[in-house]
Amino acid sequence: MTPDSRDHGRLDDELFCQQFELRTLAGVVAEGRLERWVPGFSPAAVERDHFTRYRWACRYVRGLTVLDVACGAGGGSRILADEGGAALVVGCDLDRDAARYATLRHGHPAVRRSVADAAALPLRARFDVVVSFETVEHLRDAEAFLRAARAVLVPGGTFLVSSPIAAVAEDRAPANPHHVTEWGFEAFRALIGQHFRVDEVWLQTVEVPSPSLGARLRRLAARVAGSPPPPAPVPRLEPWDPVRLPAHRVGLAVTGFQVLLTRAPER
Image (cartoon, one colour):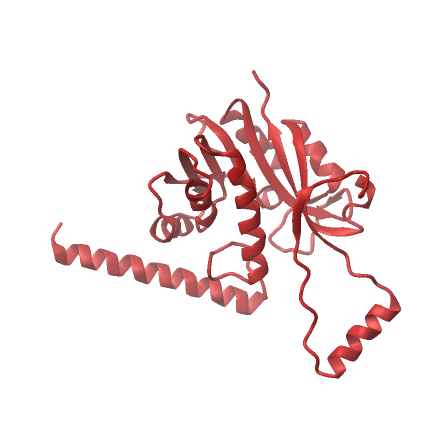
């Protein structure tokens, strides 16, 4: 390869990345949100939520092989390798453009990329850890995905999974148009528990605002006076305390995500 062809290739790669980022920004402007996390180009709340989950996952991956399912633009895979110290991270995503972008913008010596459907993972490989954040609610066949995730784990391997908490047991018409199904707190654990042993339950939640008349009047008065809106509550990621927050109150008193640490069967 000549110097001129290398320069041309780098220019093509940079133009591709910039176009990918512009599409991300356009989606944020058009929809007010974006389902895929593109570090540096996503709404602040999306950035914060994803960074928090991946940094939580770092405590479970040091020196291990990791499959990051639906890795998107690749920021999370890089965190697992760079901050988590994983020996190898394979980031897989169905979107070829996202995989290319991840390689170009978030490359790391310990990270590899693969184009694969979540329900058809690279079954010839085996991993110590599978990470699946905000994936299962997008899938029409959640059971197929969970079977595939179990198949690529070594016996006793770790499956880290998260999903939004619905206010009902199973919501098949969620408000988010990108989601196929959202599960209530107990229903999601029951779904995952059919395939894995649930060892730890964490909540990344904010309290549901009070619907009281006084609270509504205060918000209305602030808007009329032109005052800036109050800062959005910051989700906390912490172990679930069933004494402080009984299971039947999750999804009603708080909203957000549940994050599970689970294990594959030993054989």
